[in-house]
Amino acid sequence: MVVIVVGSGKLANEIFNNLAAKGGYKVIAWSNKELSNEQAVVVHAGSGREINDVISYCEKTNSVLIELATGSETTNFARSFPVILCPNTNVLMLKFMAMLAEGGHYFKNYKVEITESHQAEKTSLPGTAVNLAQSLGLQNNAIKSVRNPAEQIERLQIPRECVARHAYHRIVIEDSFTSLSFESKVFGDAPYADGLATIVSAVLAQNLENRRYDIVEFVKNGWI
Image (tube, rainbow, N blue to C red; front, side, top):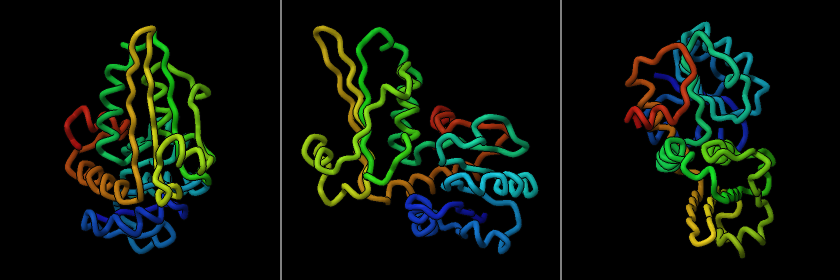
């Protein structure tokens, strides 16, 4: 099976450069899609400008689309091919997100804070933080974002060598007597390609319906 990677940013490049070694798949860039022109697993990690062409390709070839971009129009309506909405490809983090999706409503009457930190050039709100907020009943504007390198190093304890590529999330749930903290730290690029290889293997192992899937559904079904 061919995996086609769409996008030219840091995440897309990391996936393109590492996925073949992780999963043993033939990986080609979207710009070379004519080399395949057949059923594939298409990984969209782009800005969205190619999304209409990506949708057309998947419809024509009955390909599976793994959507990594947050806020893409693929989240809004069903398609005639499988679409997996995947705001994070780190499998351990996905399992935590699945757990919170199941039990987040238990904390609706408590004080909840969510802080996220990523490299300074990331201007969009990360899909993982949005997913965590939704599970806890919070609006997106409740998420605290940190992009200042000095604050990342000093307050969040991000190693200096990882400031340029990291993903940090912290949830604090409190009442008058108790404080619970959940913290995740992902450093470097390896976890994304490694996790995506696992997700692609799960896609190929299942007879997916022509509908949208949330990647958390894969976790709940025991597929990853």
